[in-house]
Image (cartoon, rainbow, N blue to C red; front, side, top):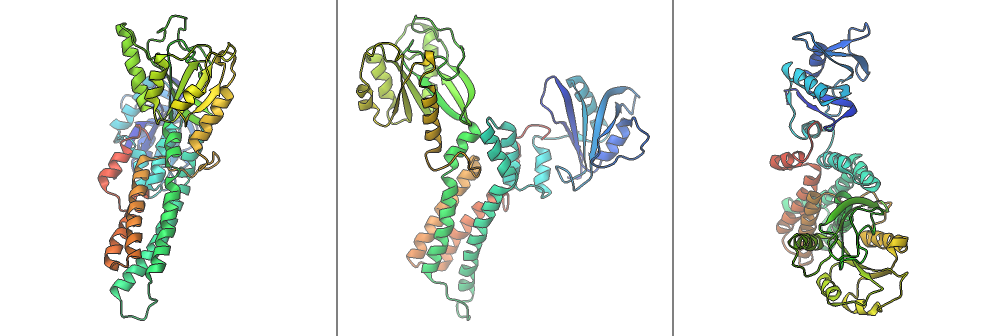
Length: 454
């Protein structure tokens, strides 16, 4: 990491301010070559914002009016010398400044390389570094809070506590293997089962949050499905997003929208009605509806309460099967045409809501049900210690499996050498979460997910 890197740190497009970030031992030197301060100070004062202009030190051309700040290592984001140049948010200005920085000795940064350097320099562990991208991509206040909690290191601290407890067991195992005849406290299998079980309980408690954590990170995928013209469109969007008429098949395509329900990020897919049709374009829309249906975390089936259920309704209901589902009986402001027991027989686990979407009735109850389904009574909305990362979940599952094997061998009084293998594997998996004893290709894969400039 002897070279100096640079990149545009702000998103593409117009904006009031754009930022060019530089990190490495030449950062200050490069800034001094291209930055013309307005005041009479000779030296750049670390962590102080300086006003002036960026000037092409080769041609003398003034590029933009800027603010510049210099962070001296190790007190910076990367723990290296870092410079940030704030210019007007024009892509022309940003590109010109970046080009000038590169001409003066920096190279273009790879995706996530600034955060990767922060990890390699010990300022962040791997789970904290991954929290940075989760923070950037947060879709709701809750997902933002969870990512910030992980960035602050609270998740890492919990992993380290579990590893320390497991290490205590490993030390006892190793001592009894290597020095069986010495005057040391005899390790009993009963104690070992108790100690390893204590560790496993903590791992499983973290795993219990993984489903909710995934939803907080990626969003809950909800698909609204039903016959044409039952009022599916705009049920949760609360605004007109499709042309709706009395003619079946008006919605010809799936409509996707991101929204937040009680702090839960939701990817809502309002589908074209599923029915038999000869219309080629409508057939494409129906195929997309089926795809959204298969990929959804939650199905909302909507039926027109004022019309008798027919073959199409029952066909859709039969496809839902064991999927997590909510049934909305819409248009309750009109005379009732069927009893909900017809649906309860096919979907005994579904939650049924009577509503009049046009009048806004039933929407609050729907939001309550969605919230309860996500948290499931196990994870509270106030909790910030959630497993939101798939890599973390996989490693925790592997650690849990290894601990289960170790516990079973301890119960069976198997040789300590065999038991040590599984306990050590669990210890390694937990360490890989925070970046200890993790392979380089995994590190590279993690940071490849980042954007340039971060």
